[in-house]
Length: 209
Image 1: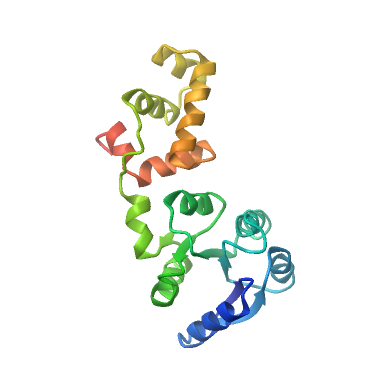
Image 2 (image 1 turned 45 degrees about the vertical axis):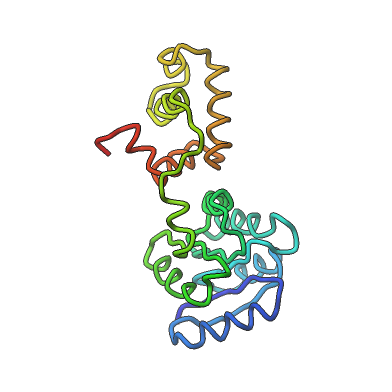
């Protein structure tokens, strides 16, 4: 049995998920938490295989904070978000903070178990209602110049060399980098590379990929 922790500040939601997992015969809800601090205490004291986390806990960033803390302290625990938010930027932020899966509450009853199954096999999995929106190439208003900057940032060249190739100062390069991260919902360069790959920009930058 896969030991499961439910983290949601609504008891009725946790109860519904408990019944869902019980019916699988594969997942056992061994603990429940209503906030991030309680969840961290639980995973510190007992073995957990997967945590199912509501993104909107007591505070606006409670779920994101929990993802970040669990990733640092308990990286072996798989983390799957269940959220009412379907915006690609929110989904990508959760993945950047350490989520291995993301399911909207609209799709949770039908797809939560299958998404967790994939996560437990080592995949990063999304519910079907958001997977295309997150992974499909989209027009985020990137100019040809921004695409050139993105290509440089994803290369192994140092910032000074990238700036020289683009004919701009390093300070301007950093400003363009910040703009790209905001537009693509990435907080770090590795996250920027992942978003570029998921949205098809690598194919635009490097047609052979």
